[in-house]
Every structure is written in C-alpha cells, then in structure tokens.
Length: 281
Ligand code: GUN
Image 1 (spheres, rainbow, N blue to C red):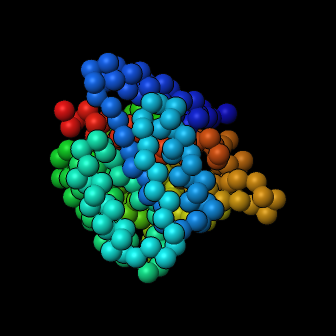
Image 2: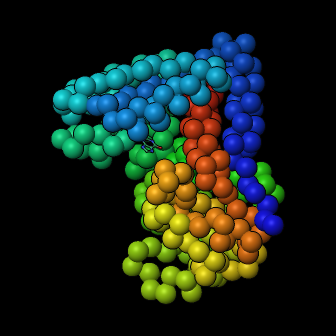
C-alpha cells in the first residue's frame, strides 16, 4: 500500500512551529495581525473565514474581522483596503473570494499592498514567483510543496505534471515545482491524450475540478499523487479529483480527501502572516 501523505498531521506540525515563533516574536515586542474581509454571507465563505480566524487565534495572531453586506460598493471595499494598507499594525489583508458580481475581483486583488498580500494573488506576488524573487506565494501550492518536502519526497529531476491552470493553484504550482528543479508539464481541459501526458508523471498534481476523474489509467506505477479537488459525492461524502480507492494500490504515495491538501492552505496562510510581520521589522 502507498504512503498516505497526512496533511492534517503536517499542518498541525506547521501550526505548532508557528505558535512558538509568534510567542518568541511577542517577547521581542512584535505582534502579528491579519485583517479578514468577507463581502456578503455565502455560507461556504463563512466557513472558510471562520476557520481562518480560528487558526489565527490558535497560533496567537490577532485578527480583525470585517463582515460587509452584499450591497457594499467596490469603492467602499477599495477604501477599506486602502485604510488597512496604511495601518501599520496590520500585517496581512485577506479578501475572501468570490466577491459579489458587481465588484471587480482583479481590482480588489490589485488594491492590496503586495507586502500585505498574504494570499499571494497580487500580480506583483505572482510575477516575483515567476522570476524567482521574494514575494508571497499562493497558499495551496505552497502547502503542497511542504507536503512533499516533509514527507521526504524529492522533487528535483522528477517529471511533474500539473492538471489545471488556474491562477490560484495550477500556475503557481507549476512555478514552484520548477523552482524545486522539477521537470514540469501543465495539462488542462484542452490537452490532447491527457492520459499519455499524466502517465509520464513521477509527481502528479490533480486540480481538475471533476470528482474522481483521475483513475489508475492516468497513473504511472509508483507515482506520487496529490489531490487538490474537494467535492461531495452522491452520498454527501467528501471526495477529490482522484478516485482514491482505484489509484492508491498503484501509486507510491497519495494525499487523502479530506485530510490531505485542504488543511495545508490555512497553515500556509498563517505562515505568510507571520513572515509578513517578521519582514516588516
Ligand atoms: N476563496 C477560496 N479559496 C480562497 C483563498 O485561498 N483565499 C481567498 N482570499 N479566497 C478564497
């Protein structure tokens, strides 16, 4: 049976490390503060935002919470971001996405000062990652690199295939694997002979958005399989983009859903907040 990559355990480890770091920083008079903005009351967003605030409290990061009504105008939201950009005690600003349709998401992302862009979504953060300069990295792909490293999986020289090209996961994932000296292919919905491409992968990252689409026909024997998807199946049970029961017997390591990639995203967000506060001084 494959090695099960335990994201719950690894994220807990990272949170413990951060908790100690924050305690040490407090002794030197450095505090950490994240501003969390939610516009509207989408139930899924409320759960995510609640989890982020809980993680802050656990680690010792202060959080400022802004729950704005659905009718908030773009101008009002941008004015709040501008105020938080200037506020010296705020280390990170997070606007939970999606924002309501009448607000331009790109304008919101661009409005956040890059030094407080703990989501790593600002064009400057993405550009910095692309050319190997310092900047915040999108949390889910950064978490996947931690999962691989902390599970003793070597990336350098490996054939890495990422399925998906989103700005939040696929593209930064490819750049991070490249930074770790992987040989990287990005596949997507228009890729011809997807199975041919994914069967080359020593490390396969599936961010397709289709429940259980990746079966063993897509996998090279002994590959490492990272599942970014999260869906509810017909029985209301959580599942990923990978058909776990079908794929697990043929791979060398695999992330479960839930308990794989998911918990890493918040851990890396917390890491970015702590780094932002540390860098400021
Ligand atoms: N919505 C879904 N995932 C994310 C995320 O990582 N950050 C933000 N800001 N919004 C999201």
